[in-house]
Length: 143
Length: 283
Image (cartoon, rainbow over all chains, first blue to last red; front, side, top):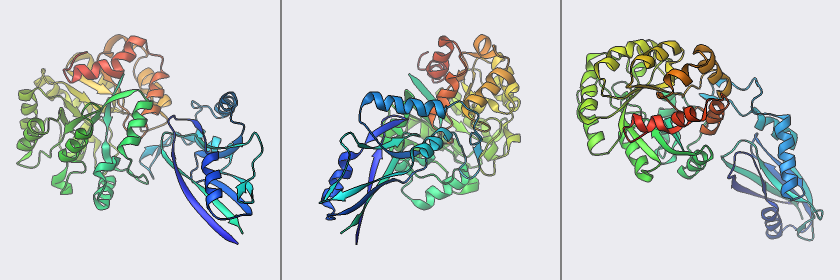
């Protein structure tokens, strides 16, 4: 069994944004030298998510809209207070909730050196607390 | 357009290269578990909030801390990176004999636009005689002053030296010098409001991150601690937007202020017109 890991930097242009990362994952799987196995895509952060969906602007708007309704900005969250451990206001509970709902990773088979994706499937890094410099991991395991 | 009148550049990447200096600064200013941010990232964050100009506020209590937490040289180096975006203020420690000379140099050689003083950290009242040469220099060179006012979250800062009413003798003595009591002097909000009512050379800003999120806190301060029409009817020309970054990201602070439903005219004043007048640029 071989293991290959790449950390990828990403920075949104908006506060809340779905960023398509399919090509980056596909490229790394192709170049990492593993023919058959599994690839994981994992975010390193707690106010972001990794998900798979169809890459249509209308779908992206609907997904983000539903998350906004589930976790509105103006709700009186417990986390909206001064955090002595940071010296800052913890104002990003909606991001934490959306991260929970989205999940922190996705997984796909690697077959003959290629990621096996459904026809409509794209991989997204979801920013829910931007704008920040972020990282996600592509971790490939196999032979 | 938005002018952010209250940013402490403690986490600005270009002045955080030395890890020891960075950690000392964070201890003194009470910022923790945060990393330095590159300028390009900060610019994206400012653009997100429509911010086109930023007051960079230093911190010099070097009679106590040996070196300034954020020096005039730090501020000058940052403003040089983007003079249009960054408007730098100067700070000196009046407990040092060289303070007035240092301040003159910061104004005349570095081109810094005003003075920032934190009397809570300096442990001196605003009318302390050691501050008089600095006030006189600001009058001579027509430079505004931003005062830390009210409660201060920084290490070894005592709010008794920052009560708004204790600034009145200074505001009264220098009617041609624009002065800002930052943070609405929280928690002494009504003292600040009273002073604003009387002194046209006095301003405040919305850098208020203490309790709650920005929407809740702004409602408490501007619609409950103050009468709900005080800003609109009395002091709309003297309130400036300030985010208090890095205690909060500016876009969140601005979203909180937007939620108060002030009139468009008042929001324009808060977001940029008053800051331009404070600096005697226009407005």
